[in-house]
Length: 154
Image (tube, rainbow, N blue to C red):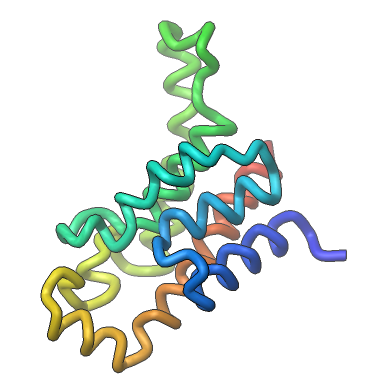
């Protein structure tokens, strides 16, 4: 039987690679939610806007989806939102994700990772032609694996 980390990673990879989910941020969140629960349709919808760095050269959508997924498990609960220590503790897994992600992919920015501005049609097409979708599917799988590992360690 596959581990939770493997299940989450593979699910995110498959839905993205097959284009069942077009947002890298949503694929990461879906893999995590389906594996660890709870499933939150509103959060899944909300993270879609982060895909592809929002086509604004921003942070990688998979990274942002992973950060928000970590927040579901490590963020301060409602009764501790005024507790600075609870907030500071939630930064620990986020910092680990940032570090591991940057170490693997060389940047946190979608534009740097893809070597394309996905908002420019000819650059987006060149990215697709050189296997960019498959590259991002692997990035989604790896990012989901990092997030899932952090959750399992909890």
